[in-house]
Length: 122
Image 1: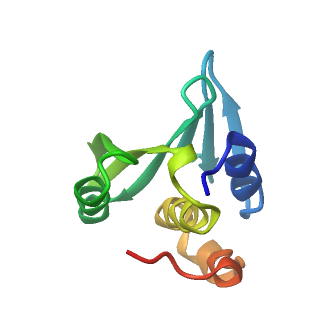
Image 2: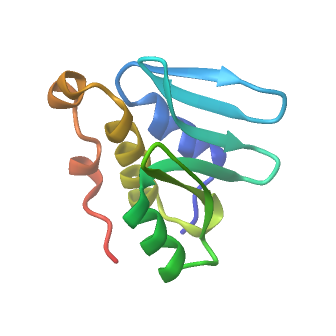
């Protein structure tokens, strides 16, 4: 059921105009110079940008999978334990993080990967 870091990287790199940065213990993902996600291989977790309401809902519903990372600029970032989410849900979370960050014209023309894997059910 769960995902791996390789799954996360495949999902992220399939998105349009993503840049990957490397820190001492993490990778970061940006679109047009704005960060939308992080990956920490040592803990097999990802940090993803979400709306604050989505952040709170995810953490309240499944605190064993999600935790609050921080809030910034009206967005709530969540830490996702990769082994506890399936590929469909992770794809939707990553796409939402990218969509919240990418310019509107890019979002309008880029393919939506969630159309291929179905919708996340809650």
